[in-house]
Amino acid sequence: MIWWLLAAPCLLAQSALTLEEAVAMALKNHPDAAVARAARNVSAAQISATQALPQPELRVSFNNFAIDPELLEARSNLGIRWSPPRPRELSLKKQIAQTRHTAVEASIHGFEARLAAETRHAFRRATLAAERVRIAEQALALRTRVLDVVKRQVAAGLKEATEADLAELTVADSQTELRRLRNTAAAESRALFRYTGATPAALTPEDNLLQNPAPVSHHFDPQSRAELQQAAASCRESDLLASIAKNQRYPWISFTQVTRRVSAIENRGPWSFQFGIDLPLLRPAAKAEQRIATAQAARCRTQQQALENQIRNEVAEALAALEAARLDLIEVDRIRSGIATKALERSQTALASGRADQVDVLLAEARTVALHDRWLERRLEYARLQAQYEHAISQTNN
Image (cartoon, rainbow, N blue to C red; front, top):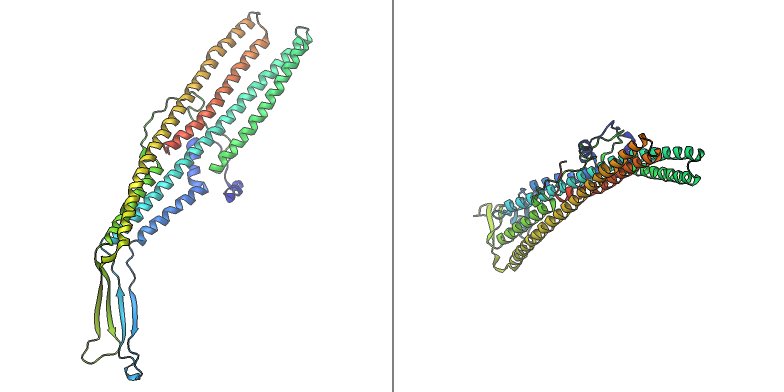
């Protein structure tokens, strides 16, 4: 990760960055993504390794320790020994390697899903933070105008100086809030950079990011979660290990050997052939291994079912929290576009007819701006819950 940060000046700045582009850049360029994908080549190589046959063995023996040098080499042998694999042994080992490769692919998929969800979350936070800065600038401008009007009214003797002090205090508070939001926006921009590696001049918001979100259409298959795919692969591997252990309980050729005598012996041919049969008469280890693998497979399926129930509950809770946040956003927007907007319109009408103070109009407008900022703050919380939901369903698209 350190080199990723050091390489920042060398990366091209983007003129404008969309959400889809940010996710694509994170999946392509993030160093942790490259590390995760490197495991794919390892597991693929392990599949090829399972098809390798046992290596033959060169055997040399000297069977005569006679002192007579003429007989010393008479019984020296040179042989080739080979142990053939058991029936289905290579096939089962290949299936185990393929199952592990499937688990690795699921792990990569899970990482990419998390990275995509985190990148989307970072992008939304950076966009909303920038929008809050814009709203804070509007609020400060309104508060400054209120202060100017109050000062003129104080100078004209229409208001007390304490009201000017209060307006000035409000401006200072707005300035402090603006500085805080600018610092927050800068921090969110840096957080987004850690995922994409680019420093965009601007962010292009999603079409509905600055609007009330629509209800989430929920279509979820638990098997899309990487954890369940890995659990299924683990159960499959336990079944295959049980088959290999069961295969060890049957007789099979343990070795074959072709031998040639270095020196000929009278009335005997130079070649001989040997083979051995593995008789598993006393093989409690194979039975124990089979029982262990069978028990592990049963436990794995129980854990898989428990994990599926846990994931379903996690998705249901995330969906419920997301819907509650959505309704909260609608309520805040209803107040802003309803009561607050009507109050502003009445103040403007009263000002036009000479029945209201200009300060009242500016304060009414400032209240609508404050409600807009409150909506954006709640929208940030919705973005956090949205990221949790997307991660819960392993949604890799937008």
